[in-house]
Length: 172
Image 1 (tube, rainbow, N blue to C red):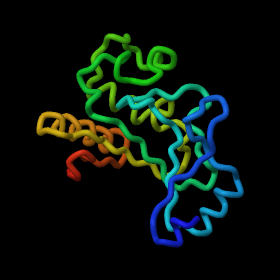
Image 2 (image 1 turned 30 degrees about the horizontal axis):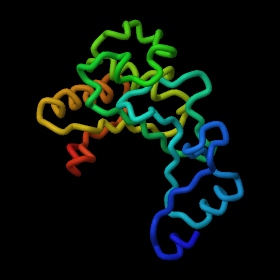
Image 3 (image 1 turned 90 degrees about the horizontal axis):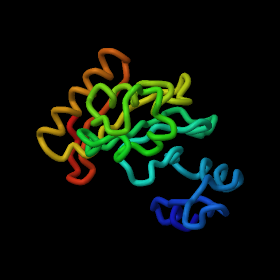
Image 4 (image 1 turned 120 degrees about the horizontal axis):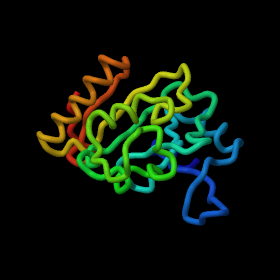
């Protein structure tokens, strides 16, 4: 709370007893206090173990009831890589995609993951949903991300943004 008093941001959570070193949702009292003090609260609902892509398992993600916006993120470094290598939980929970673990992730599969209620859009319900296509670190990857973005908009009415957080570039 001292960070807020200084006008800074704070990161909080509770230590996961089953996996020390991992943060989990803070206790309800702390969350409620944060809501009354913060202009904006960002919650990570579904980590991907540092991989650029994820297929959520049953029961994921856990989205708090008062959440109004869900942001689905995919790293474009996944493009052209084998599904089993770049997509967290693909081997256990990605059968619905209809591709093998050695299939190279392409624009079509990326759109499927990002638009499906079995993929990144899972548990969104009637909340606003936006996709962030990160790691657009060169012109070729940006062009592929823009094709994904265009398909999400035209076929699924999903807003998206292409960016490179590494370089700080926002591509639209």
